[in-house]
Image (cartoon, one colour):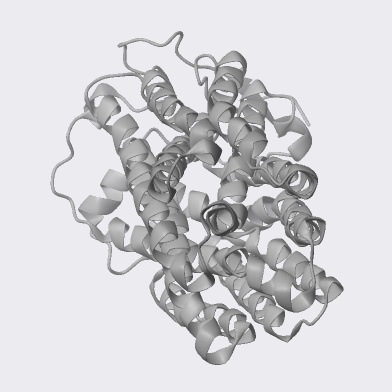
Length: 451
């Protein structure tokens, strides 16, 4: 029998509880104490994303150093970032489907091995072309981290907790971005920039040991109590079937997530790869001085990641629909990003740091809820595939912004236009999401005809 897709769902944004395919009123009630082992899994995902962003952030921290030592201009640096984004986008196109097929445990393990090796390869590169190859390898292999993480959350958490769990593991982006500018300058000063890539890349193998030892599916895990397993499985079960990319592309819910990622992910890449240079260029900081300001930016954004996920989960507990809760939290996050348009004209460094930090917090809270929309609207077998499609769209946006920012800086030397885009992107994205998925109607697998 062939499997088709059918859309069902509740109407409108209101106080009524979600209809069929969503958590029931009883499921939204405060849960009893059933165990907490699922949060150990969330902690592993947090550590994995932390490692992921350490590998990404090294390039941004060393931008000025590499330009000096290797003779790059702004366009050259943009080309290195572009190589990462292009490979990352292609990788996301296949990573989600790959992880859906081989499983979360093996898929994430393979991704960690290859991206750690690619990160270390930067340490032996000596030319622009060498960096582009290493950066492309890093992007291709890092593509598995978020599809795997979202799939793990869908496996280990009921719907009411997924936004909070996603917010917590997504906070690893900030933890990695905090640790890197604090440690990398010290490594560079004492051992040189090559060791910065070698050491951060090598950390992945320590995480891999923990992951292989701990991660299993909930129903296969010896440490999980029957009560906690029942709680994890408390949502109405979704039918299991394979979904083609072609069929996913026919649905507005897919495009709501894809376009949301396309519009907002480039802003995060901008902060990650250009914020250290902005502080050095506009406020005269040296490499050894950027650690604390960048740390403050990502400490603030870390709070935003958890708070954004907590807010929507809390609203659901208080009786709001999933639709109302997710989009309400995303609106708060979008509004918090607007003041960053003034960052390039901030009178002092700490004012600029505060503006960027609050905007980055808004991004992370928005992103936590945006990721969770996938598991709200799609059944488990499609979660990693849809996440991969959206991540690919975000990477394409990152490719475009890499070229755009490099060109703007080379031509004008000013960050004003990039920050204007950063402040407005989230309201635009939320409008597009609501237009395409006004009710967050779930895609349900049902028997019937279809390809």
